[in-house]
Length: 485
Image 1 (tube, helix red, strand yellow):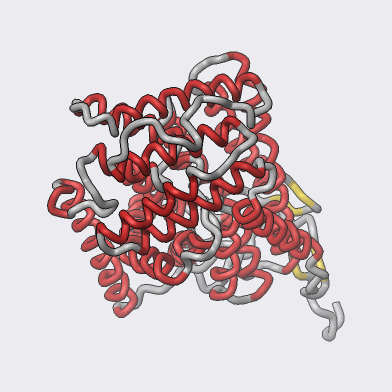
Image 2 (tube, one colour):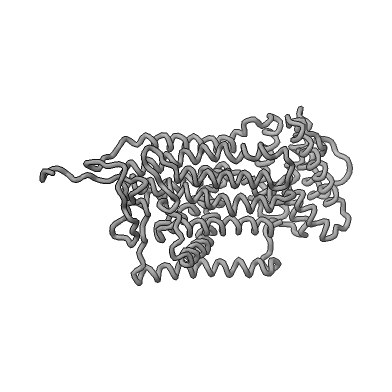
């Protein structure tokens, strides 16, 4: 070899690993598949495709929340009016102001005319609650509650919706009938409202009436053990930050990312794997559920969807793509010093709590006018078998799959491409938040959860703490929703 000729540079392959030389990780290097005489920066075609897909998906999610395409015009009108008075009611400070909002809502909604019978029934339920809150009794003109389902197309959807709406009508009638309701019936009524209508206004008023409260804010002194647990978790979160600062002052340093210093071909390969993940997530879970739904076996379709996505994750990560083979371990799913990783994961979950409280307050104060929506799980957990399905999906599948791809592929690939760690955290966290159905209003909160996953990954060199943090966060959200019923 001549003196001025650069030695061959081994690219990432199924036989070679390129960890930061300053870290303690060492993987034996066997003969490589690919070599190059110099590091090159190929055109980022996969990254451009990926960003086009992410922008399209984020824009589509936002458009669905704002324009509500496919929604009948009648229902769009009703939702617009309901949201208008929901905002006014939330801004009302006194009981008299709230009563004036309810009176105005009753007057406007009662004048609405609907061609769609199902939407007319929805308007009738809204009016029934508003009139109940105002103490109005007797027959009234305007939309009436019904169980019509003419806005649905399939017979199965019509049947399920008709049954749910009939139960909801009965519940609203009982709540405002003035009759005494025992605790068992109250619990049953709450579940029916939450699984059918959720907590949106004015159904939250009916839920508060079941709890004997005239306001949506629960007195902390009446929350009992829940308030105590919340206080302990908040203090634990503050303590986690204090402990972390103390450790950094005594010399604790991040271990870095397993694929942080690889060549650009490997970074682009991670982008390709993330694209395949998006495609798999769009098709496989729904396909598995459709295939097994006719069997009518409880949880079979949901379990198949979860197992299918977990299997797809392993295949996408481990497959050889364009001459480069990765593995879950090389991507960052490592179980070395597992107890320490659990501690980091729990610590990350606790550290989230004070930050999320601040971000929720900021979002509530400054982002109220931005598009927002509900996650389907918020209502799913109150349906029959919904809690088990929610845990399977949100506590088991989502943390594993999302952390492997959003942190392992997207964040790590960006870090390798940009030769930085701060901007990749911001970009990947925004992408993570934007693909959730809660809307722009929740991006700060969701983005922070994604950022914490990145920070844990960089600190420990493993995705496992981020998976644990994510699972605990989702479990906490489910338990909070159950408590708030």
